[in-house]
Length: 213
Image: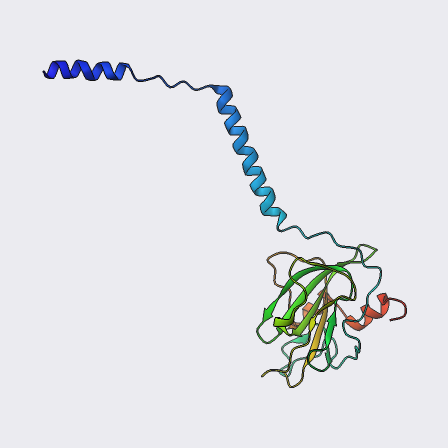
């Protein structure tokens, strides 16, 4: 019996089909796999590319009554930081406008800064910059990230004063250069050497303000 079993086992092994690899079929499968990988990478990086938006011919003020209450470069109480923008004291829920066409690079909250919106813009001469709007009411944002906005479009409202602010106010900054995904840019205060990376808002607005504004 053991010999019969061995012969039966041997016979069954001999009947197993032989696997043959077709080089052309393997090449096709590898090609399909490469295409799928390329598509995955394309969609992954596509989400990082900024949307197309119109060039800005001119700028409007971020609020209807833009009278600076705290100047660009003002030092903090302990002298360790400077203001990287300008601040305007206004009533809570004052409407805030996008100063030019662009796309929303960031819309969220920052401790001590309340709601913050950052928009990337491009001038006709190729200059790219970002406008920063701080101390907004985060639950009343009128835009979302990656949304394309027009100049003068309402984007939100000023928040009420909190523990750190005696009065409601708008922080408005203009940061040079394009938005870089993953790099934090919504700063209200910082080291004095960072001033070189910002435009003085009142001066920049005056140079590029739309006629009649």
